[in-house]
Image (cartoon, rainbow, N blue to C red):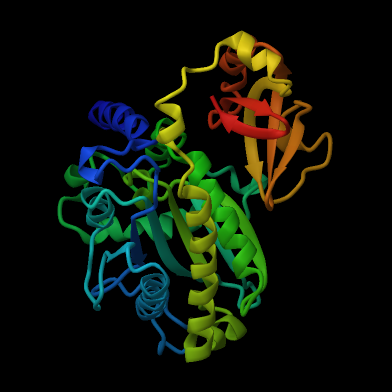
Length: 371
């Protein structure tokens, strides 16, 4: 287990350095950050069918591949300069580790993993978006799903020989393994959350309109990727209406079109989010410069980011009274707000004992971003 911890810490250090890639000479002197490479990951494949319909005729692995290929075609048509890479293009078994390594090896700017959900109750339906994080207890599940979904998606690991060595002790059936995801999630948290919000907004337009929200979950494939990454469950194969939609050509194309719209929205925000042409000719602002700019700058600790607004006194807040900041369809919950960055960091040391996923933030004119 110590080997696993050390690997997590080492990977976190690398991920933090890669969180904001800078243009280099190889980019031809480019001074703007651009989304150049996207990796599309159709879930399951080969000997791993994923979820199966009740009549045993429809496999998740086939639906995810069809939707991913349609999405890739739409991206290629609209953005011929964007490199679209698939973790698989046929009915082939790909390990979770290899899926992540394909993205890392190609220096992807965004990782999109496409899946189909299933549940014992056939009336359960809808889509959901997942970013890296530690799920809550079943009885206090704030993010629409619980560890059962994570175990199912991660359980493909058990199909591999000697998986305990290859996955450095990670066992999808051992709750202790999930503790270490806390070390990894913050490097690309904000970007992943932005794309997840775009996905939820677009998919809610149909053809499957019921949103089950955005949740933080410990999916291995999200943990191993060194870029913004989102896993999407586009519908329930166990629900007759969802299955009918996903089995139809029109339904698959409509889902792919919604995902493309989310990609387009995210790419617009991503491109040019770092412009070195002005940064290279100006010095960093001194603290006095910031104060004189007239901007309202405060600091605090973000404890939650949810797709629903909790009521005051909700048990999930654990006694804290946060300020709530909308960001698209997501609400960010911030506590310990003050005008001092040092005070915020001191607050974080105590808050993280109850909220291990929390992190210090700055708030500028109502917009929350990590420190």
